[in-house]
Structure formats: C-alpha cells, structure tokens
Image (tube, rainbow, N blue to C red):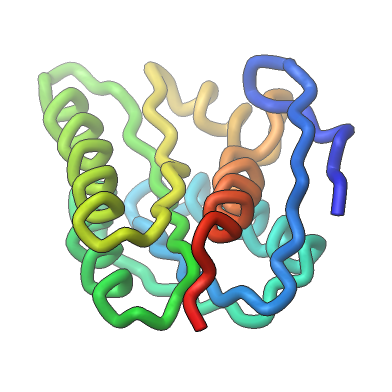
Length: 161
C-alpha cells in the first residue's frame, strides 16, 4: 500500500510503502502529557488500520522515561513484529527535559538493537506545548502516524513466524 500524500513534520512529502497485513504491533504510550499522547495514539492506530495490521496491543506507562523498559519487555515476548513508542517531553525551566528525552531515545534504541525488534520512535521532544500540539494532529501532521508507518516498514525486514 502506498501512502504518498502524508506530510511529515518537515513538510516534506514522505512516501510510505506500508502493508501491515499479517503483522502484529504493540504501542507503548506515556500517560504524561496525556492530551498530546492520546492524539499520537489516534494517529498510530489510524496508520496501522489503513495499512491492514492484524493486531495491535496498547500498553500505557507513566511517562517517556518508562517507555524503554516497557518496550524491551514487549520485545522479549517475541510476539510483535514491531513496537511503537509514543510520548511527549516538553522543555521546562530545568535540565529535566534533557535527561528524560535523551534517556528515552537511548533506551528505546538499545532495546531495539538488543532484542532485534524494530521500535519506532514516536516521542515528541519540543520546546513548547504548542509545538507538541502541532505535531500531534495539528499543522505539522501526526508523529504517531509517522512512527506507526515506520514500524510497518521496519517490520517487513524480518517478520517473525
């Protein structure tokens, strides 16, 4: 399936070749900044539905910092062809943003590499809440949708039985 008219956050047209038929996915969603993360989840579900995914399990965790452990545990189950991690970290007045955003990214990449399961990075890291809204179904598209389409493409590299 081709989804060629979907704008990415950079306003570049991304050509998705996503056929999720026969594939199983898990979505790990952070509850912190729930208004944003629920919109990301809606986008991810829409993408997987359009691509024909066989099954989707949604797991919620407190925040972005907890995403890597949840994704790793799901990956180790050898049930999912790919995992989608969704969260929103908005910069504040302290260095907290840098630690949470950086460790979430590092941990998700580490979990993917250690378990040989694609983990799509759908974690917004923005300076303002308005920027997050624009990337969760607003003017800059939906990063949850993008992450799900990335997961579909990556899952096709080595589908489990």
